[in-house]
Amino acid sequence: MTELGGTTVLMLLLAVLFWCGERRRNALVISYAVAGLALVLSLKTLFGLPRPPSDAMLVALEGERDGYGFPSGHAFAAAVVYGGLVSASDRLGDWRAVTAAGTMIVAVSLSRVVLGVHYLGDVIVGAALGVAFVAVMNRLTRGDPTIGFAIALILAVPATAVVGTTDSLLGLGGSIGGLVASRRLVALPVLRSRREGVVLVGVGVGFVAVVTAVEAVVASSDAALVALYAVLVGGILLAPAAVGRLEVDGLESRRA
Image (tube, rainbow, N blue to C red; front, side, top):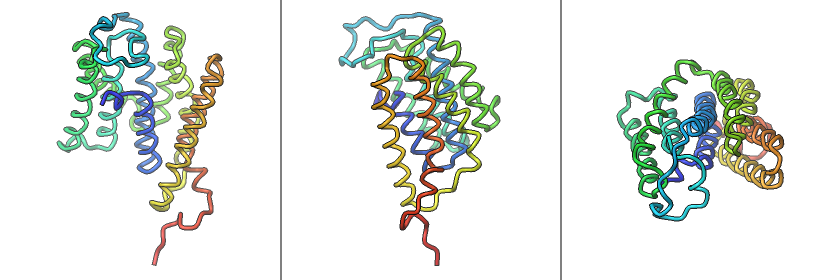
């Protein structure tokens, strides 16, 4: 359950939703996620509060002891992504959608406390900040993903300078790639069929896998990582353009 608030799972979720769903709306939430990553890293460093002691950790999870604990990044990210999806789809008045998003946020938050990697206050504040962040981004972006990625870049520059972790480099590179690629959203071809959606997801996941493999090779160079993460987010947003040009039997929906 805790991984449903992790960076990898959330980015893959948003990528699939973008490829198979409404492009502009889901690109907007991707921009929120990238901007939120930069913000929460800066907040963690600003407050500098520790996690619970190691003997409180229920399960040994690699990397979970690293960094500061307040506010919870997983709780914040869950609120930004799941809350952002509901907000971007104009379903704040749909109690089922709000309940589903709220359940995911609570489940991810509580899992962090149960695992012993956060205090209760860490996740409460993290989730609350995530909800507030979505509300602010809604007002600032007015539904424009390009503005969202521009805000992400503004937040990512100081985060990279102060924090300097791989996640901060992801925020910087992702915001650059998203800012460039989001300008091409209106030119993306529409999804022609479910089969094309399957092909698009397959191609997209393969692309992400290749980027992940390259990441291990260039991990020692911050500049290379920033460039790679820019390619990652930009590639996710532009993948429909590549697949849309494929001439594959059955990709186009059949009409009588």
